[in-house]
View 1 (tube, rainbow over the protein chains, first blue to last red):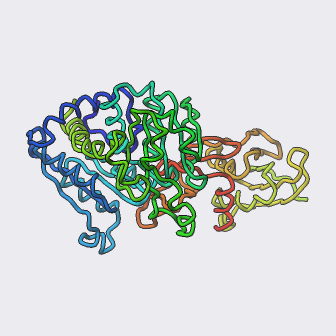
View 2: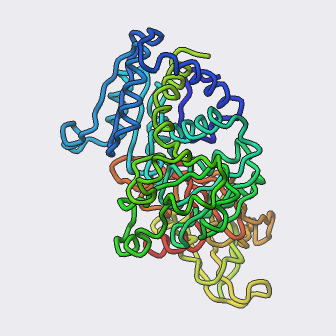
View 3: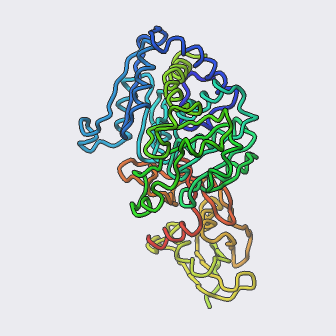
Length: 306
Length: 152
């Protein structure tokens, strides 16, 4: 069911697929600090045309823990791209060297295009403001792992819902897991894209758009916080208008349920104050640590089968 | 205003002002040799004002003309033989649009000149026109399409 598949959008997967992945990831947690030789002899290409810390290192760690090897480029200026090589040719070359390709690119649709060209599976590690499917896998794994079933939960997504690809993938994945209710909390300027809003409607996800976190906080079981994607604003003056417009502090958490889980795909800038880190609500570092077992599970399933 | 054609195709009920865009979609530049008549801004019961394009000596296949629905959804195609209408069909968009339209998202892979990716769209709705890019999934509307034709 997974072998040889491309991973372009979280919507490429059913709930059954994702639960299979989660169970495998749970198994992989046992090996997150050791090595198993499931993928010995396989090579994973990591083509990062945009900066990354967690995604790149966790893919790299996952492949190494599974006994495979990695080809990494993250400094475009040290490759032939600096000489003017286009994406298509770069992908053809990596395809001939590696068993799978992980790609991050600032251009939307770059991963779909790479998947059309490459015979090896292509995994989208973020394409512009579009998709970040493996982040959504980690996000929902964290909820599944820590809270069990997702269906009965009320989820809130706070922040830049317009330019944030992790937020988009998280919101789209709600059509797979069907939570009780979904709150989309953002300043007016950073509301979710119309394509996504219509998709939620088509899939009967009960969602409410609001600008007021405090008003809905008491209802939430999970609050997914995202940073304002400064680098993706076409006009920096627009960024200045919304900069600092929301912030989760330990003070506001007085209004939250006792077992509210706060997630964040990281990096964080100012949207969660440091005093929240010490509260029982802070799950974002644990969430980041699940990046390795989830990506181990995904690589295992794609490269060696179910 | 323009005399009847003997054999060929009449594209009627083109929304006013779009006849030249219709020719662009059909790839008719005038150097192909056959006679072409363009009538613009004539009265129409259905549309108020409309344009008409007549192509003498060439029967256009529905596949060739269906893309006209991108800018003129009410257009009809009349195949003329010996001065008589032998077939009349309304333009209808295919489910997938290949080429012709550009994605409205400047940050889409299909707008990178060095990548040679042909834009492809799923038709979400014909009226109002909503096309969804198969690469970046962003919507492109009739307003975007008309703007693109104006720039050609």
